[in-house]
View 1 (spheres, rainbow, N blue to C red):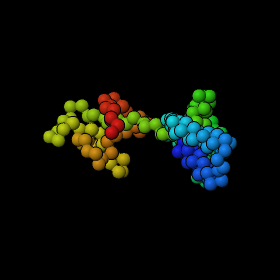
View 2 (view 1 turned 135 degrees about the horizontal axis):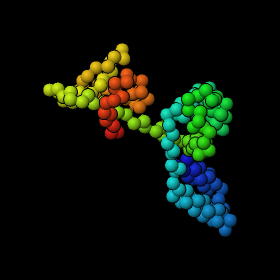
View 3 (view 1 turned 180 degrees about the vertical axis):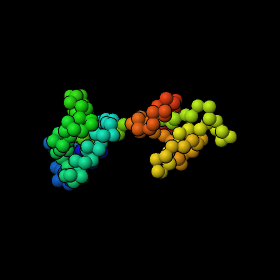
View 4 (view 1 turned 90 degrees about the vertical axis):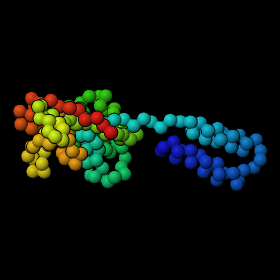
Length: 179
């Protein structure tokens, strides 16, 4: 339940019971307590969303597809525990107790997906009339040189760069700033 939902619930309880209220010390105390609770609840801070890697988000989404979107957080944790085996490339992540707690917090309180850094690959000495040339990738996975264009695939994760030919690994990578 979010803070706003909690406040609305308290306000509804107060509104629903105000009709039946007798003006005596009991109801004065009751409504005074509700007003105080509403005031304190309004000051609560929402839990901070944790940041998880993309592969953990993928696990959570697979569990939701398997069981249906709105499911109990413990069922998600159970599914991940049963379906993420040692054959999974990120299995080691789950062995860390801190990461297990992070996963439970993410499921219970919401999360954001960690932005993976992206890089452009500069082609040294290749500066054309339109500027510095970078490695670009065509739709059929062929590499070519081109100045920066936001509509071209020119930004790559480390994982993607590792799949490029060896000669690309020798070039300078320029980290792309997030907008």
